[in-house]
Image 1 (cartoon, helix red, strand yellow):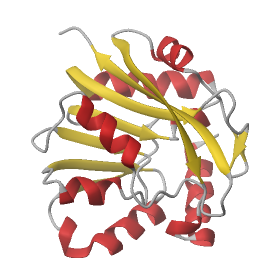
Image 2 (cartoon, rainbow, N blue to C red; image 1 turned 180 degrees about the vertical axis):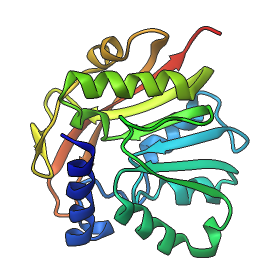
Image 3 (cartoon, rainbow, N blue to C red; image 1 turned 30 degrees about the horizontal axis):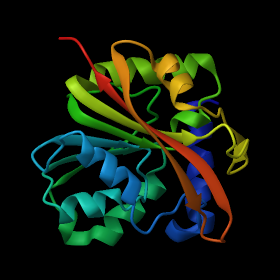
Length: 209
């Protein structure tokens, strides 16, 4: 999918359904927060939320005292919803990045890369390779990537698009060196309308210098 088509698709999803009407909505992203903390990240660490959109992860990070937060999403509509919700809480604290992660040029590095449900939409190997290249550039040696995708028994499609499902070993193999799998965790997500979706969360550590 071309970047402009991706942007149009996700802008339309937020515009039509609102923040709490999309299937991936979480009032509090507990699993993400637990895994981010489990491997030593603290409010002094730097983090980027890939595909963050209107996610409430940024709210929880601000509440916990994090100072170096970036949120990237191809859909400006999603980011605008987060900005409006946070108001003055986010003033000067958040770097908002409107970009397709497969075309983005990272300008700094991060201790934590968080992605809940972006990578599984990249069904084209060229897009996956572009994502991984940016992951390698943006994560500091010793840093971690927390990546959540649909599990093998999860949905085959989401928001009208096909997805690539992964188990932890498959995701780690796709990402490859210099990342190594250090944690895998399953999660059952309940959508706003009460259906369930099987996710798998993987934590990958960037090795090397």
